[in-house]
Length: 501
Image (cartoon, rainbow, N blue to C red; front, top):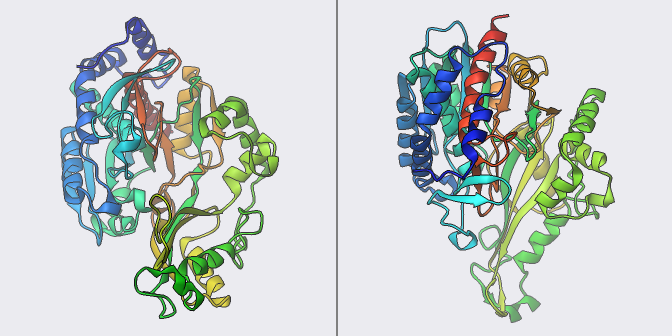
């Protein structure tokens, strides 16, 4: 059913025939043919998944999403798959025993961010195939790249290996949560389940499928990710009798305090006058600075990720304080942040409305770096506000976790470097991702496992309108769906061989 771009047949063949690594994926041509044969079915499966959005913040499709994730695992060959209840959205735990000496952990998220259909050029749940000028054929939809496209490519890879008559080179332990987009509120409960923890403890590490290929075909390796804490600050009639219970006539501001002003005053204490440097008491106490090696990696990665392309993708013309590119990247990867996601108070419709709001709310997030923790950040925030007399500002933490980091010589990272080196794919290594995923749940105690991201696919628009994932590439250096699927096949074999050394 997938529309093919004219002339891409040879491109796809060339990409699938990319020089195999020395781990020599057995019967690679047969597996590649299977991937090609299941191409349309994989796209249809991805479209069906996009059509079922699980949105934790809206409690949307929370039981259905877990059940569907469990079904996808079983269809991919996991012999055992079950739903793990939590105090919030359920998770899924699955195992695939291939009789291999090595077991690999896989982390999935099956939830997606909210969306407003009015902001999209195509329906966000349709999974429409659209040609992107200069890139190729892409699928558009919420969750297309974050993370259902890469995850579906991984599932297609293990299906293809088995359908070609082979056993996987590694056993798999899958944990899939439905609350990643609200900062993994209850994911620690999942990993704490004895059966899940015991299975993960047998793995050599855990990775999340991702779309980390750049427009020119280069790849990115990350050695960790910042932590994230999502929280809300609320001021209003529910937090103090100084404020009205509901919106009232604005003339009353002469004698009644406005909670919106109070919230603004509280927010202003969190950052310096420059508008971005955190000044929460003790905020930088446990921030670990970049090492010389990490600075070297950042400088090298800048060569493969040009500044003009990055600015164009972000829609900006300058960095903070007009800093040079390398300095901005060092800030990007090393600085913990206090960000306002949104402000809500009073009337926001057309024109004006003479009201004094009864409630004001700010939605914020912290991004944390080693060696900060979620508990530390939240504690310091509350102490900071209390010290300044903001006892009427309610702090509600909705989710979060600390940063994670993995050594450059771990099996998962060695396998990525080897795969890229022996396949002739240029790549950069980044000290960490400035975005976040709950790798610390695996990386930290009691498991203390390597945790990484891997994927040779391309997409964009995560958390934004018109999210997309590349299906058919117009550039032989950039992977479409089938080539991305084969990259996962190769990666599993390289991981198995590196683990056996």
